[in-house]
Length: 240
Image (cartoon, rainbow, N blue to C red; front, side, top):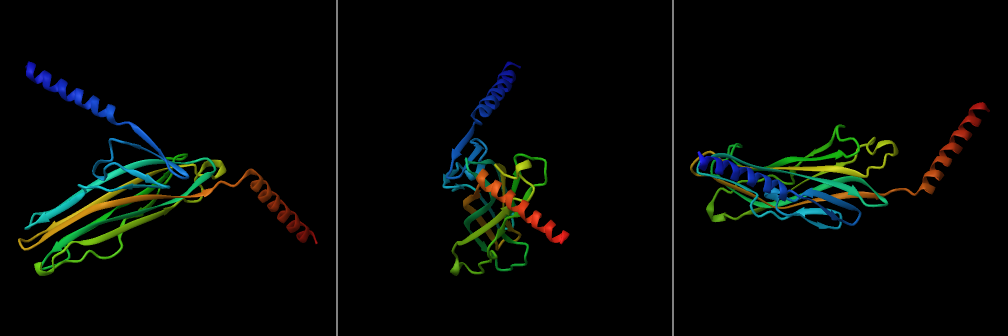
């Protein structure tokens, strides 16, 4: 009984220490700042920042199935809060991914091979319960099969997605100062017979934030004044 109690206490202590390691990290880019949980990157690995892009170079994000082992699915989801630096607003985000694969199959029937998919999602931090802006992750070219070991070699794949900030985000002033970006990645390898083998690996994933300058108050005033003048002349024409 004492051994069991110690075991439970040990698990509890490990859980507490793991939570303590989950520390939010903020990294400042050129026009935006990224805030993420350092302990939840998982298969993506530790991210780095270049300009307004957050990128990963994973080393263990892969799926492999051989000799009729069936479907193997590997997935990881990463969340990052993005806030615009002073003088900027967020207009959208793009995702770029790449890696390599092989698909050895002498009897390709459409249900064996490799695939990459997932979702790229933006949410308005000012209205987190509003409908998100979502795009599916799509490979840029088909992932084809190799039918002979004489021509074996890994092939590079690329995939991506792009999301624009919808109209109506940003509260009353319409200035989108922050979004939550969710990157959900899925890799699939399928082998259904003894003469097949499939492997796919993700080696790069980059999230680039698109920003625009926030108009100066003087520009807002000129814009409103211009609208007022247009309304005035429209009314005069209507009276005439």
